[in-house]
Image (cartoon, rainbow, N blue to C red; front, top):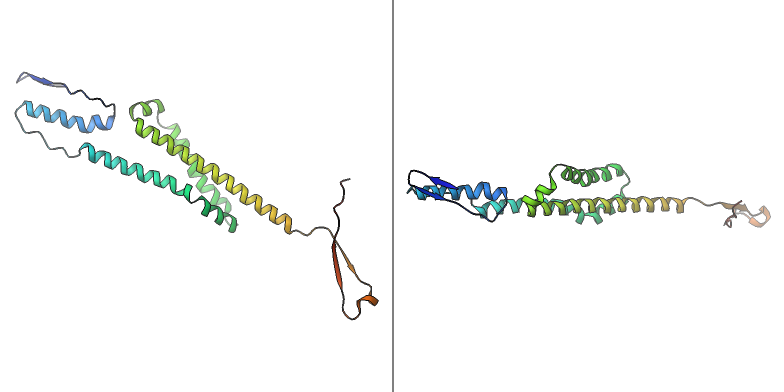
Length: 191
């Protein structure tokens, strides 16, 4: 609302937007321009229009979305490396999980979600989607790590020698060379 008592004019700007960014930056310039026009002056130039503001915000949103999607898309590569390189497995699992679990928890704690979804529904629902993607990435990473560790333990168990019976043939059957026979014993019934 603008009131110019010297020239007996007033103006009310009705806006169908409930967004702090739009209201604070763009419509204040409109209010100043209308007041200038009522006073007989040229409207001031705006430094940042609504299109430029939304392009900046959308660029930031696209960048953050790409940073969240990149680890999710690289999980097959991460799984392959996690299987092949047993060194520093704890770090290779703990650092990404910290990012994928702690960051969403902090985002869930900090803002007032009803206010965020009411005043900035587009950003609020996008943020909820980002949190969901981070949690999904963490769950998939945990499952892949479990499968890799389980596969490794199964391989270790299958390569350990089973109970075998080693026998040597008597010396009169061997001739000049020694023959070693290894037989796998049948499994023993539980006692």
